Length: 247
Image (cartoon, rainbow, N blue to C red; front, side):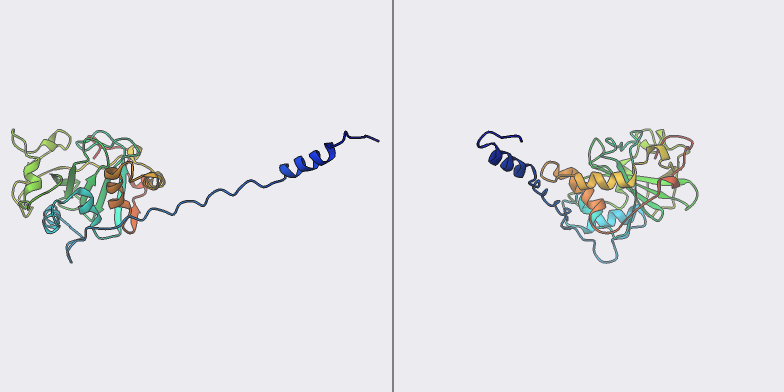
C-alpha cells in the first residue's frame, strides 16, 4: 500500500478539482454595425438613368454634398461589382479598398473608399444600349453649389479637344444624344474577371471597417453596402479578356 505524506491527499484533490474547472465562456460577438442614413433623394429622383439625372440629384440634395451622401440616397436594391484594378483614372487601393461600380440599367456610377480617386465620382452611360460604347462623365466632391447640367462632361474635357478618357477608351467622337452639350462617346470597357473582388470578401471588408479609425472610408462603404439590398454581379459574368484596358 502506498502511503502519501501528510497533507498530500488534500492538495491532490484540490489540484484535481482545479483542473476540471471549465474555461470562461467567450464574450458574445458584437452586433453588426447599423449605419444611420442621413441623405434622402426627393421623390422620383433616387433612380437616375442618365448622367444628367445624377447631376439633378446632386443639386436636389442639401449642400455640401459628399459622395457617401449621394450614394446612400440611391434607391435599393443596388447592383454592384468590385474591382481591384489599378489601371484606371480612378484606381482601386488594393482589394480592401476596391473600385465599386454601381449599375443602374445602362448607367454605371463608380467610387473608391480610399486612394487618389476617392474625391471623384465617375459615370458611364452605354449609348446606345448594347453598343459597347458609352458616354463618360466625372465630378469632383464635395459639391458646394448647384452644378450646370453638363458639368460632368466639362470636367473631363481635354485642352487638345475631346476628353481625357481617350487614352484608355478609344474610338472617341462627339455625340448629340445627351441632354446636355459637350459629351463624347467612346469604347466601353468592362471589368475583367481576374480583377474582380469576391463578393464574400467585399462583405468581410465592410464588416471589419471601424468608423472610429477610418470614418471617411467607412462612410463610403456604408453608402454602398449598408442601406438596403445589395446585388453582387457574379464573377463568372465578367469577361476574361477584352481589347484595351479595364474599365
